[in-house]
Image 1: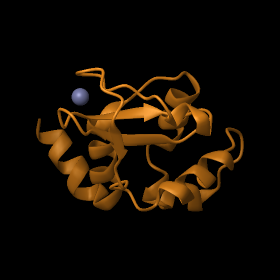
Image 2: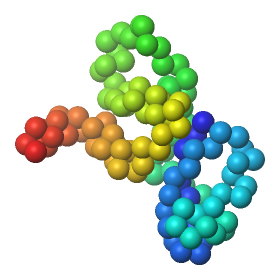
Image 3: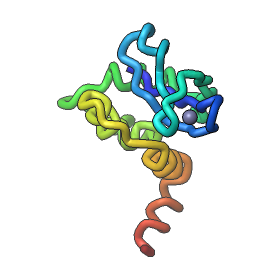
Image 4: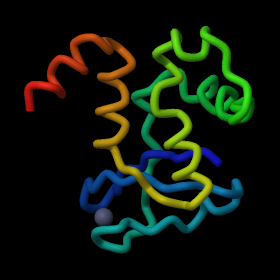
Length: 114
Ligand SMILES: [Zn+2]
């Protein structure tokens, strides 16, 4: 169940949409103006596909050290759960996650200063 990002061709609103079935992509309405003219944006996260694979392979009971050493796995469980529940975490969540994954030390440092 990928989450895609769309931009409205009428009002330029950008929003994300969870797509369960390919045919749901037809008739997506803009959240701001209701227009059905959308374009799908290229994901800012190039690892989208492999992330989906990671999620599919996620297991709750067995994780070895390499799982925790790989910063790309950060937040994956929370995200998977949110997707299962149909919750849209929004771009802010992705942003935060991306920061944590790219530079965990800096991210934790910044977080602790707040
Ligand atoms: Zn619109």
